[in-house]
Image (cartoon, rainbow, N blue to C red):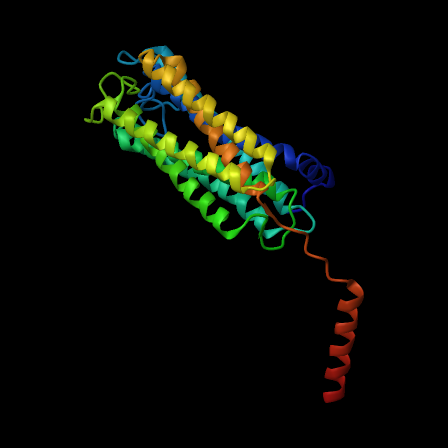
Length: 320
């Protein structure tokens, strides 16, 4: 199928904007998911892919409040918007000249990830908001947010293999730190699973004391922050601004978490904490990309290609 030139021009002109939008969207959909949870709207649409049996959209239901229906349906609709943005990223990557494999791959991952999230979201609803399915749903969003940052960075990078700007030991520290971040996010989902915001009044909770899980979550935060401080001493001037942004984001997120705990986990702070989690993931991924570089691969000169073709032709002719 031939695509009009103006469509291609539009896609290429706004390619970076699409990449920025998919970073925001992947992190933002987790925030809207938290709003579904704290408002008790997780089963506002009690079936999937329909909202209620026989209708894709909310309709009057004797057992479900209209507010809960529209909050949950709104979150599902936003998933479609994320899919549109991801599709635009794929199209822009596909029609770029030259077409770059890494950019296409990262863009396709975003689009496929939206589909995976839709299925996981459906499983979450059909299992009655089983706590571990909600955890998986959130963690996938954070992984996609990280990869969206890599997609955005790939647009300003070249296609050569990544060359570290830091020593091998500092690279190892960053890898371990990324693993600790994953555990920190996982522990955060456990705290939520045992806490008061189930997403629906009838949803069973994780049967572990919230205080125990909160302490685990705090310990992992202090470990992450300690590794971040150590990283500051060994970066040797590399990526100072992304590092400072990450430090500020982690400190703010930690302070918010303590206030949230001391004030009895109010709903608005839950959503702000989820927003902070996405911001920490974005800032960590941004520091990751800032400590590596990919230079442009020199294009093959057409004269050389022509010379090789001519040489090959003469060789074939001589053998006939």
